[in-house]
Amino acid sequence: MTNQGRADARNPVRAIMSSAEFERTVEELVESTGRAPADLAADARSCLEEMTAQVSPQASRVWDRLGQWLTRSYTVDADSSALPALRELGRRHSLVFLPNHRSYLDPLVLRNALVRHGFPPNHILGGINLAMWPMSELGRRSGLIFIRRTTRDDPVYPAMMRLYFGHLLRQHANLEWYFEGGRTRTGKLRPPKMGVLRYLVDAFVANGSSADDVLIVPVAMVYDQQHEVEALSFEESGGAKAPESLSWLVRFASAQSRRRGRVHVRFGSPLSLRETLDEASQRAGSADPTEIVPRVAFEVAHRINAATPITPAALVTFGLLDNDGRAMTLAETLGLLEPLLEYVRARRLPLTSDVDLGRPEGLRRALRTLVSEGVVEEYDGGLEPVYAIARDRQHEAGFYRNTVTHYFITRAIVEVSAVQSRDGVESDATSALWEHALAIRDLLKYEFFFATKHEFDADVRFEASLADPGWSEGRLAPEDLDRGLRKMPLLLAHRVIGPFLEAYLVVADRLALREPAAPVDRDSLIAESLGVARQRWLQLQLHSPESISKDLMNGAIRLADNRGLLGPGGEELRRARRQFADELADVVRAVGVVRTISLGGLGRPDLTDEQGR
Image (cartoon, rainbow, N blue to C red; front, top):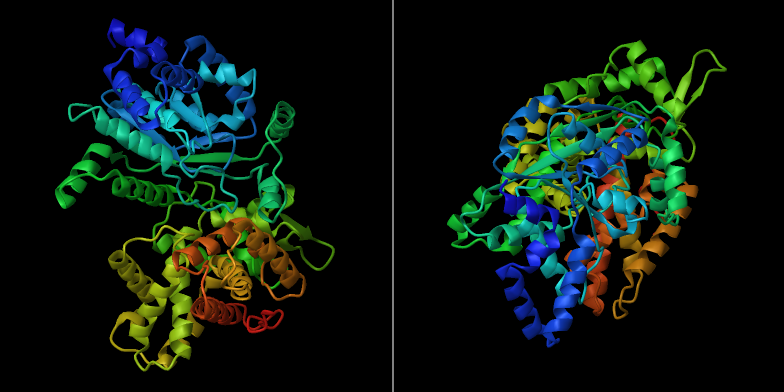
């Protein structure tokens, strides 16, 4: 770096404000807002001073020691095989690390993994709600950029953020932020927030064609156990979130004294921003950021999901959830997990090195870990120990399971589609299966990151062939599907998509009962749906309390909005809402059939046709 470059890095506000880009941007803002130039320039300086950060070696050493203390609960298991090549790329280009977000500890864990392998500290973007003095001052001197949660009706702040991003890219700084916009409440990857990614794309384009490339690095992080899961589950089922404060930070830090296993860090294949823009230009004649940004975000999400390793906790909770309340012996749990492990190995899905659930001792070790956390309870007062998800801890168990549900989503859709095709009037059950699969894919498009329809069709055919080779060969009659379902050693739909669809059905039922001419208040509809879902659970009309979920119900409202069902409208809207609820009820009924077949008819009767609607 040149002497001028070092000076610019030490004083980014002065470097930006002395640039031609700043002068031009202020002129444009003055013209568009009508504000006085001096007033607007002062506002711009204030925004820059609020957001900019530096990387001081002394402050970074203190921050790193603090990070090691705060993450003392865990051993960091980072896949080091990808890091030498990434480090070499970082010598020539800015690297933008986009991890999934599970814990407040995520930035400290990733920093630990990267610094140990010779990477310079990242400039990390975080919400300004976490800027608590005196930690905020130390953080700013260690590369933390605290940004506002919303910039609505403020054109100055976003403009300065774009200029700051451009400055950092010219400095070859590495960036990091958590593009879900907040920690996952359910364990699965959340829909991405596009705002900061748009700043990056705009800054890269503004820097010109001669600017060095930017490589976006997807990062997957998974914890064996998490202290935060209990609080997240409480919030998700309707509880109030505790505000961040200094006293909150002290409590959070003290909770990290207990050992909780490992945190697994995996890196996906980097995505070249220049190549992405060039491909878009060749395809459409120009690179429109409104199309580029979602495409990049969803590609990053796919690569994070593909890199996410399957942990023992995910597999054990997968097996113990949705068993109609039955506790399982060790042998029963082994028998349930055996076909699941065979499926995982057949697809060559990534596993953590400690997955050893095919042997009794390995399974006992995984169960002991979950028992110690209170997620699983063990009863050993009978002939042999039995295990079950602890009462009122299903949300937490679901959090661990949902870290890997994306690997099983197409399989689950195939199972439900097979039931619908079997029970329909179609003589060609094969064609009907594809149509039902596409319909379920559309129902769940705000929960999971699906491939293109062409790729999804190939995935469906692969899953159908894996389950029964005859399913994808020629025309099958409904009775063929029935035989195929009943001989399958592994059925997953009730565990993978059952809670999502039941939550959606509650919202759809409440929406169908509302007057179509009245505007829909989303918060009110979610609150009402949470209460109804809790009642249905208490009356045994839901199969899992995981459906009592603000996040899932918000997804249902997004889907209803996408289908034009929020109104206002008239009788046609009323009928469309009823059709939406009926469509979901039919899919939930089909999931219930899969559940009944899977559990061999044991447990309470299927109540999916008696939803109290």
